[in-house]
Image 1 (cartoon, rainbow, N blue to C red):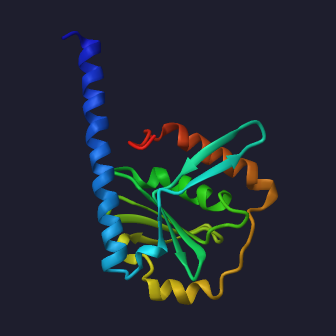
Image 2 (cartoon, rainbow, N blue to C red):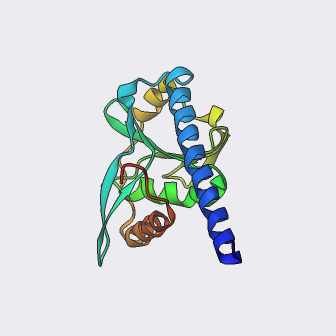
Length: 175
């Protein structure tokens, strides 16, 4: 096997390992939300797709989970096998632009460590999946949340961030 083929085979092997890791992480997060945090299956939207309109194109974007509480979108969650910090900007931008208001919370996690962000304030509020809100806590928080749109001067930039990250995501099995 020549050098180029060896490199390609190592890259493909790594991509396959990551694909299985993401599936395992997603399953672990799903079970944690249901069993430990007491969300109902009906509170979780799995692999939702959105049409994102930019100034020069339209693109479909997706996230691993959206949590709804009292029929309101409460949080977006992205599962990542490594480098969760690098996906933090993506989940924040995603939460800011996929609706006509900002979804108030976002989390990226590897199933243990996490970056939990207050999207409106732009602040990190937790660094472990254990810090994520229980359903009861979310029900209390959602009562005081106002639907605040992304500031118009930031909207296109936030959409472009989501678009850029979508380009580096591996396609899912469903695609």
